[in-house]
Image 1: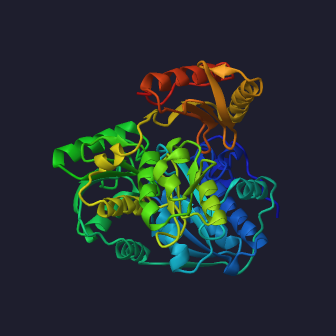
Image 2: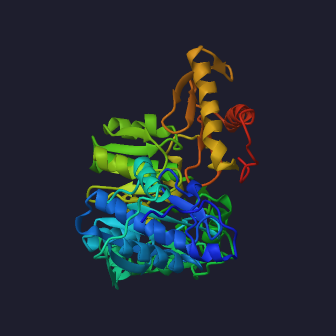
Image 3: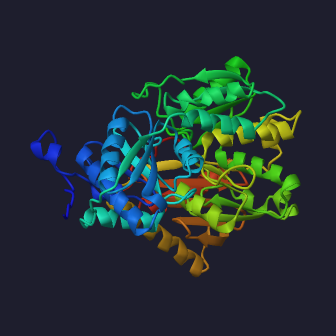
Amino acid sequence: MHIRPAAAIEPNTLAHETDALIAPSGFREYDARWLFPEQINLAGFQLLGMALATQMRRHRVPGNAIVVGHDYRSYSASVKHALTIGLIAGGANVYDIGLALSPMAYFAQFHLDVPAVAMVTASHNENGWTGVKVGLQRPVTHGTDEMAELKGIVLDGEARAEKGGTYRMVAGIADAYIADLVEKNPLTNKPKVVVACGNGTAGAFAPRVFEMLGCEVVPLHCELDHSFPNHNPNPEDIAMLRELGAAVREHGADAGFAFDGDGDRCGVVDENGEEIFSDKIGLMIARGFAATHPDTKLVVDVKSTGLFANDPVLRDAGIAVEYWKTGHSHIKRRLADTGALAAFEKSGHFFFGGEFGRGYDDGLLSALMVCRMLDQNAGSSMRDLYEALPRTWQTPTLSAHCPDELKYGVVDKVTNHFLGLKNEGQTMLDRSIASVITTNGVRVTLDDGTWGLVRASSNKPEIVVVMESPTSGSRMREMFDLMDGVLRTMGEVGDYNQPID
């Protein structure tokens, strides 16, 4: 039986109820995300589940076993059930953990000794989006090649039914996950923290973790509400961080933590309520490894601060830092392949190996590592540790709309432009070009340390832009104006999601 999905079906029709709809654009670099039900319907998710089971057989996943979970949106449970029906029809043995955070699903792979995972979530995307984070072996998730293979199985009609699929509802995973975090991250000093969840899934779990550790907890929008009445749960959103900061000041807290919709990312504000970008938080944690884990390796994404490359504390401890592709699947895989101790993304995805974690991204663990950092530096506040870093001026992560079918071509043109300048020995802003990194989009660094990045978003129809300068805010702005000017000559690019300063 060959089932090929339709790329588009008129809504509110018999065909939309009975035929599989899966827009090809939903298969992205390392996630699958669609607008529901405009780009994928429940029949499409059933077909996707059967295709995933087919992929599992091709890769000889032990026991054809897979953990499934879902985030808190009005339609996520229905989407997961449709996916589960397809998995079972394809011969998979499904372990359903119910409502969960993405790191809770990854934890369940280890706790239940199940190799594969399919977590139904659209993370921080706006309502109307859905998707799946998929992996066939713990702790890594699908990267570009694996996602392309799954896309091919779906679109080429290669999904196959297979006998023997089973279903098991597993209770108690949330309790086991929370107990594991609490047991492995004891705190001597119990900070007062504001926990912001944007009414997303983390609200059901994050406050309890800090309370069990003895912290004084001030919850902020922790009531589950899938309409997201305040703002999307997105710790890269300056509006979310500033609201968190106001709560920290109001309650006199030591720190504030903001979690995204599926709990695998964390944003941080200090005791003054001022946001600290996640790459700088990562560097602060990394400095703590200097005394206890010298001569180790770290991985950071290309959006992260240039300070990682030349930080004197890391250098003196022999800690090597590698810049790698943005994206939780890319970074997880690189951490596993290199045996690095930890990895950090500017988006707030943090990954810890060794004695600290199992190699997957977990926003709650990231927040606890910040608390452990404060424990390790008793007497110093978050602001003290931040101000010990060399100063730079950074933009937030900026995004501008660009259609999925155009965004990679636009970035290719921008990349070729700056490679051409470098190869011709040209200058930018009256400085020589020190490097042009094309690992993921294009990151151009000048000889004064000022740099700018342009890349295509992996999970939304957007172009992503980040700038930083160790010289001044005006220098950062000049770099932004220059690179944005080039970007806008290359194709259809909309306005940015927020101001740069």
